[in-house]
Length: 454
Image (cartoon, rainbow, N blue to C red):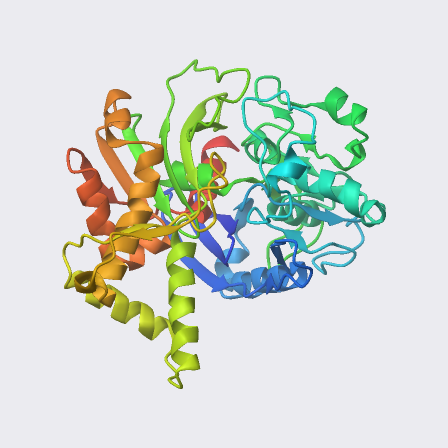
């Protein structure tokens, strides 16, 4: 009888669940759904929040679409999800999948911690810089502006940590270094929070999760769930970037370019690599913890598929203002068609509308505008080229070649659905082999990691 591993990824805009056959490591079933969980920023503080209840409902809907006969034979459950963000909750041991007594999810895209605020925070003992959207920075913001808010809760974690806590009925949240490093104030060399620094600043350290190794077991399911029996092992939640890389990086000479909501370009550092003791000033490359004490070199851009989505949304609203109603999907398809007929352009689009963590004040620009390059084909071609150029400016092709990289693996929903983006990738990395991984996604990666480690 075949057994299966359930891999779940709680992404920024969608949730995906896969069933991986334990022996063959093949995906035998999968399903994904959009969460539509965004909450409008009504306070004008650049908040970016999502409805936790809607996320949990979507997760349940997604699992229900998988084959019931195979769910009964799931022997392990793994979860990954969007990093950096923070969710607060009360003890969940008596509330199984109800999203009761929780805050909204404050995502990695949250902008309430501006540079002035961040400059008032204590310096972390970490090789990673602190930025808005990081869990600890957000908690500091609430500590200053709404301390009564924090008093409602007994635990905090990422959205994927919360789901693990519910599945296992944990008294205290557990978190892997992959997610802890994305919060700030975490030392990856010692796998410890900066407790002395945080306590001296009055930080509510009781909210910090307990750290366990990436790939470790978090606990066992405390109840039956969609046919999966109680007592099923659940892995501690992992980061979506690391799991996406794990699903498609087959050799140390691979680099992975993932473009979904945001964009990341990454490659594996050599065995034994130790990151610097403090952040490199204005560096666009960070070192993220991976598995087995290893690291990934990562150029993590805030601007990816979300830039294209913003452009489509803008055009949709313009059309509506002009009295024409066209769906966003139709506009997107027409934009791609126009750009495919416009092979080159002298229009330049710098698409950093969300800034970047290493350069938060560098916003979007359009330059070299002329009467001859204002067609939709020119603009869409320039926008797609700009998305790729921005990522490669953070981690250039010659840097990758010097690091021994010979192949770039393309992944992510934006690359999968946009041939123009793929053309620009192939231009940017013309001296390397380019492949597009069929199973390059976090849900598959977390299932594979669990298969290899538990």
